[in-house]
Length: 140
Image (cartoon, rainbow, N blue to C red):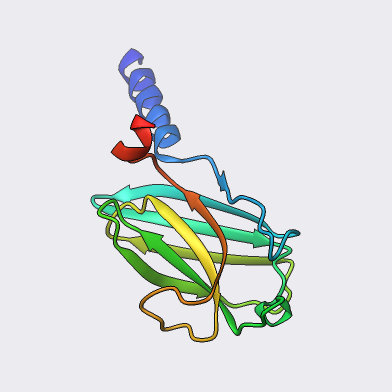
């Protein structure tokens, strides 16, 4: 019976450790009403599940410089920036993006773009958040 309790405690601790608290994006000057959060969760070697939720995010067509789509970008530990997807919403109260990554992204940011397939960000940056601390940010 003690072994069963011990195993249950270990499993519970492992599950709690694998979940992360949501990280809030800073308030955007372009869409100040938007409340955006990101969570990252290890799915197994080497995959990570990233979920981004945006509440009250205005349609990109309503920005000061109108755009067509919000594009989500991820930055790897090596500093490589990748277009990983986009929000599709029309003044929705809530927009959600969820994707699995074969690497642990250290930073995520959102831009308003005219094209969703860009290889580099070209539009207005809406907001950016660090998901994990890198060696460089730990030294600061």
